[in-house]
Length: 117
Length: 109
Picture 1 (cartoon, each protein chain N blue to C red):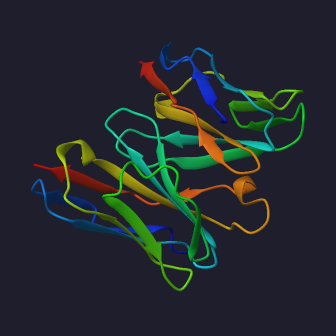
Picture 2 (cartoon, each protein chain N blue to C red):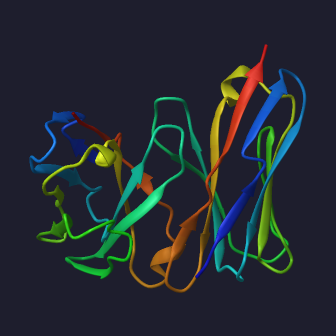
């Protein structure tokens, strides 16, 4: 079946502009995660959704970052007034979720590589 | 808060040799997951361990979960060039899945 789909795969934007990153999870997966990965670095947790609600927003770096999920499916991560330090690969993952959500393996998309010039 | 540490961060391994990478948590975990990320790729799920002292094998890979459910290891035998990449562990607890920073493995032919 189809995996996690992210778009765009690459995004180059000017400093100060807003960007929207999209994630289509695996059908039936109720949990959705956003991570950020800088070159050669580990995975930085941003936010997690269970259905349409976000129980854990603790990883969002600043109020310029926001995310939403609609219909328990597609999610968008929005970065307002982008800065150069926002340049990274943004990874989305989904899992079956439900009870013991942190027990479910994550399925990652290919990521969106964001470059802020 | 929950922290997961991986050691070492980097390894250079001669093709054909064995190596081990370790994962340690500051708190007791409900499960540990291992992922592999190839250069330029995204993390791919390898395995999940849930029981104290559990050992699972996948061909040349052996995964262990410690008795106290606070540490784990991944041992790879007869390393091949296809083993290159970064290996992440992720510790699951009540309210979080915490990833370690990864162990980047370079294979020397």
